[in-house]
Length: 291
Image (cartoon, rainbow, N blue to C red; front, side, top):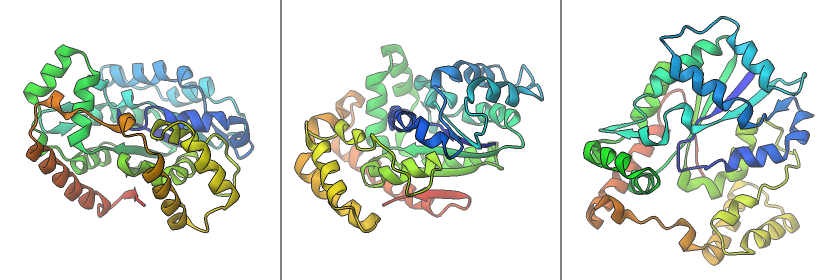
């Protein structure tokens, strides 16, 4: 089985990729692609990663899980998505590390899905906005624990990617920046979904409702449907123009004051992130999707 594991990160996709693919479930099933309901596998996989290595993985665990969640008997690809497989949201950052528990939790999934063709999909996010958003989302006690331990200047997504590769060297790894999502959204759907480029997926413009003023996404869809882009570069230019005109800043603004940082520190973290992205893009074994 070809298994696509979409692992977040937290506070990036927020489930929108899976929801869009799920709305095209019947269409994708015709190509042997199964998009099971998250509720059908979430508890199974979370129990698996939480109990390993104390509880060894039984040899037939993969078939038990796939038999329980895959609905299409002719399925060749299954898409599973849940950022909590790497850690609970409150454990996304500790000290100088993103998802320090990820290697151990991935080891359980690796033992489970041996013999399958697995690709890990992960979106990353600028720590200058990721950390404040995380602090705002978790409970007060968790936020204090994160603030007291985190070393934001030392956080590197490239180190996180290396940890994933070490934990599961056979798996392919695909990464992108959350900030680039509007410009690569349709490509992400196709890459994660694994469907042919000419597949007429629907609901793909609903993502833009999350960042645009009311009606903006519908206008973008109407324009690109009436005048299909000649290539990705053309599509990106059109999307950029619509974002300039219809972006709702209130929907994407992050209050960094929750972290107590100065403007200079925010700028520094952003610069370090840009350098880290360059490192990631050049890493061997990593497919880095960018505009």
